[in-house]
Amino acid sequence: MATTELPGTTGPALLLVHGFLDDRTVWNPVTARLSESYAVTAADLPGWGDRRDDDGPFTLERFAQATAEAIDAMTGPVVLAGHSMGGPVAELAAAARPDKVAGLVLLAPVPLAGVHLDSATARAFRGLGGNAEAQRAGRQAVTTALTGAALDELVRTGMQARPETVAATFDAWNDGLPGGDRASEYSGPVLIIRGAADPFVSGEMLRTGVLGRFPSATVKELADVGHLPHVENPAEVVHLIGEFASGATSTTAGGNRTREVRERAWTDAFAKQSADAFGSAFADDVVLEAATLRVPVRGRKDVQVVMETASAYYAGLVFTHEAVSGPRTYVEWEAEAPAGTRFNGVTVLTRDADGLISHVTIHHRPLDAALEFSAEMNLRTQGKIAPGHFYDG
Image (cartoon, rainbow, N blue to C red; front, side, top):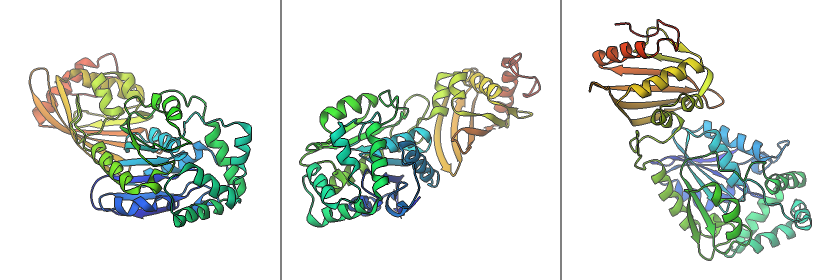
């Protein structure tokens, strides 16, 4: 995926996804300032920018897959930002990589379910490819504070795309996806930024097509700004994204997590003590190894049973620290047994190409506590999994 990458100094990584008629350079007004604190990557979607010669299809699903691949190439937690059409693209990618995406920023997002413009308006949008005059008029109609140079650059960018790419990309966001009106599959923190003077993504469109899908989202509205907040008021957008990114990776967690550990299917499953909750995170051929196991446990069903039983055994368990390196996530935790024995551990989660957990390694300490736990698990899993996995006392 063609990208512009700035290394940054502190904080999470940021991945910026452009909208219709744009490429990664549309983020230039904010990337330099964001990179003072964050590692910033702005990416071209297939068919746009340096990827203008890519073949189709140009669909939301393909754009999201390309974005997910860019996430995979990044280290540590990622805050994902998408503008306009890039909003639903970023959302789909975040839902596909929930354990990597710490937060989602949507700037003037169109609904995932589509806009469904009338036929005459749709024909005009589909015909924008190669028509500089129409693109210029369209940009001017949806913005309030563009300079001549900024407007010229936007038109230059839009003119680089092939007319057939423009038409297909319009169809993608205008038609949207079936089920796009249901609650979002991404459950992490969300910030929505909208220009108060945006005539395209109006307050009504945002309310009926977006906000209901993100009930806990924070909404920021910028005065005297239209459809391109990051171009029209880059300083305020930098401030809002920076503030959100800092909070998304250091918020105080409730339940069984400290603020250093993000909510994810794994931690949520321990809180629910549910086999089904664990199963949503595991690959079919997942393997569990642990200091408390004599032999590994293999397969989703048996691993689900073991993890559900273990979560029900603990009188208390808190995940305290987390680190991510490539496909591996390292999580430290502290636990207490019903009898009051306290022990600590480190869990290593390895994900496959689909983002599912394919291998789990759990290290317990100290030895006496680990043996106590293993012996109790041996009793509690009898008849549920094959014997011989745990210490028999």
